[in-house]
Length: 140
Image (tube, rainbow, N blue to C red; front, side):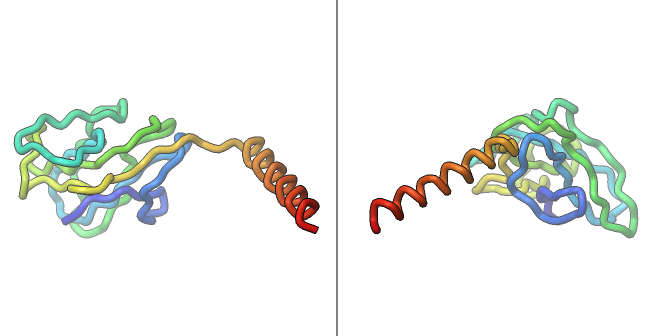
């Protein structure tokens, strides 16, 4: 079993902007699970409390018995930062090594970055074009 971040189409994704929603996919098992969005941790403490930071609290769901489900875990707006997703298999609200699933035990699970507006993109393109023109004039 595993837990990773996905977009709404079920494609794995590790970088989101604040206007997107975060999803996970869960294989059909018929089991009840709890899913948490937590601050990224490099070292997990056995028995450490799981605190969901998504603003919605943890998601508790009963999985279908035969189909993989795409589940919305955090609706927009997301909060800029670095996070992990934890599947609390035994639903006891603490991290249990060898029982609970974490999207990344060592590296980050996913990042939320600021959204770049259309105006900012156009400004960056214009500045890049101006810099190229000036560089060519200076080197001709």
